[in-house]
Length: 216
Image 1 (cartoon, rainbow, N blue to C red):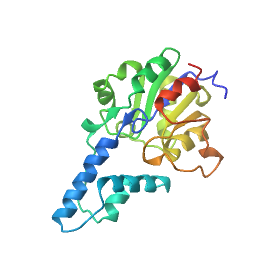
Image 2: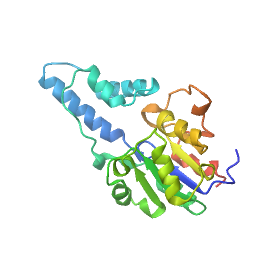
Image 3: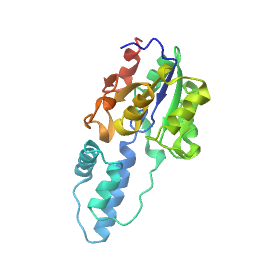
Image 4: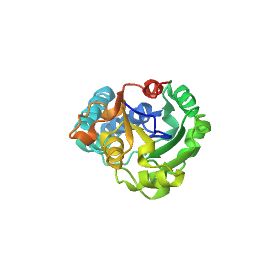
């Protein structure tokens, strides 16, 4: 794989740089509490997490939403960013890559993404953050990618997208001509490609494997 033209590496956030498991465990515990109060039963949280992986494998947009709907919950369960944390290898990965590349974020995230990355000590490696809520655009539509590339003066051929989702990260970035790296973490880890556009240039199991993709 030729990465000699790459100048910018863009990352998704959830289940790419940040581990979201504890966030979803807390949400599922709230689901269990609500169902108990309603006199309903549901499986243990571990089984519902496995169901979320099943829904992700089938291409559901929101695995948590599908599980909540399956068990008939009626409340909304907000995402609590205080429970997310960088993967153990995240900072070292960004540190190494930042020595040779510009790094950015292209993510479907709420406002304040840069602040969250700063809290985790990661913003010192990141040059630009493009989040869907702040920009009014969301993946997989190409607008968020194109806006970020235009902002930094980078052509698609000079950029790489790293993410855990085929639908939101790999397919749209590859359509634009970007290099792509799929990270097999999170609820979409087992989803299979459906076309050539779904096949990344590199497939890794951990964010700590990424520097090796770039010969570092």
